[in-house]
Amino acid sequence: MNRGKNKPLRFNSLSELHRVLGLPKPLHPMVSVVNNIDDRIKSYKLTDSFILDFYKVSYFTNPSGQFRYGQNLYDFDEGGMFFISPNQIVSNYAEDGDHSGYTLFIHPDFLLTYPLAKKIKQYGYFSYTSNELLHLSEAEKNTIIAIFKIIDAELKLPIDDLTQEVVISQIELLLTYSNRFYKRQFVTRKVASSNLLEKLEEFLEEYFNDHTALRKGMPTVQLVSKQMDMSASYFSDMLRTLTGRSAQQHIQSILIEKAKEKLSATDLSIGEIAYELGFEHPQSFSRLFKAKTKLSPFEFRQTFIE
Image (cartoon, rainbow, N blue to C red; front, side):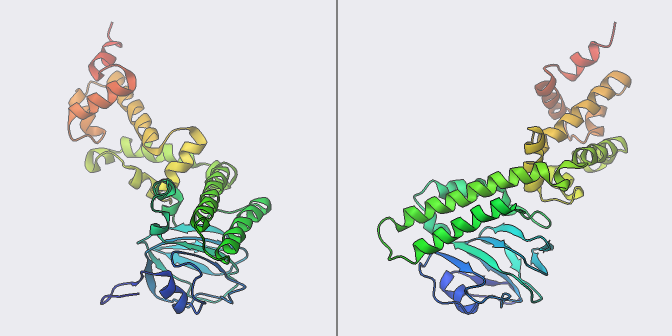
């Protein structure tokens, strides 16, 4: 553990984190499971911001209060899972409550030489924020808790030459199930299925129609996701699950439709249209338009001229 002046506390090792939390020394130096009930953790003892040098996967069964992550608050009224990757700033609970559940800590070095070391970075939920917890059904909860218990039981056995392989296989299973359950959540929860697409289209329509694009440039996924009150990763993953297209593809699709309107219904030059849609260079607009429509902007306009 170390800390510079006015900097968040940084934990380099699981042993140091366990010590600060008042827990026994971890059974393995690079991976540990904490049962928040059996280990008598009612609320975390860290009240300041901190940074972990390892992955953290948590499931809280029936918690109360809120958890600050970066500048956002997780609302735990329903319970759920959340995922934190190394080097992210986290601020802990500011209040007591029921925080029963499980937490898995994984040092990245534990995954070295295994395919999971690369694969784990592809799971977008490690960068989800705010109200983007994974909420589990009863059956899903039982599945997740069972895997936590298997990992915990394996770590309590004497370490041998297969310990790492067994634990990593269970970690991969846990992350795969989490990915599946998130895809289900995108479809079934109200935030995913209500008016996301309508809200997205309304925002982009206004963005292109009121000359915001001319002033600020093309809308980025980060900008649009912020307007949707989501992280860019959660927003993109949700859209891909719901529609089969990424957030960037949605933005480009609406942009191309606006370009078609301007090319067919106005006398603006192709350069003027490009600037109005937020492009710095007309050539970039022409390349994108042709890639999406198989016609250049000029060729498309010519189809409306007898």
